[in-house]
Image (tube, rainbow, N blue to C red):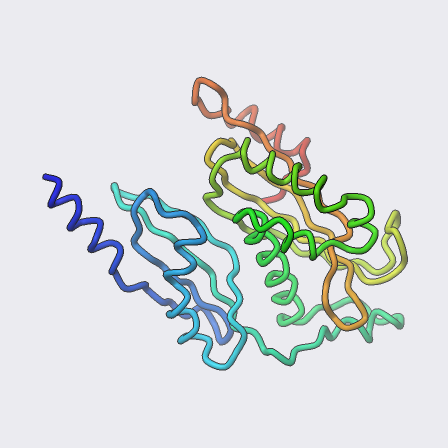
Length: 247
């Protein structure tokens, strides 16, 4: 019996990933896993396949999730292969009166930045994640204080099971912004081991060189009930609405 379990686990560990091309710049990677695997381990095992798929382009990991179907566990990872020389096309247009019409590479740049930030936070690389904050945010939330908050959330929510950016919205000189400029909000939804649901948004401020700095972050969580029973749909939907969750 123990030999069978060992051989089954060994087969999962050596299974080749499935690579599905979505379009010219994105792929969906799939990997059979056992229940003990975490996100960082799954992404590490997919790294060689991701590098082969992107070639000379920049490997960027997007949304991910664990899926359990018919007693089997699968890790799914979106892969974005980005142009290393891309510069946001919106920067010049935002300086004038032109409408904000982001290109696909513009949108993918936001996704890439957001998922890198999530990956650092979820893996406990707090100093790395903190570097993404704007100067104002760093002054307001110094590393030690910010780390305590992020670590506390991770401890309460448990292991992350999935992250997905659900909507991207661009703003020029938005009301209430700390200073005028070009901003972009990435609304997200996430699954954690001990949470009924998690949602929120990242508000990125576009820098003159086309990079992003985090100007604001909001993350809301509905913890699972002690009984383990899920919140009824009739109660879940209004709660998500009050928290500003988007699907």
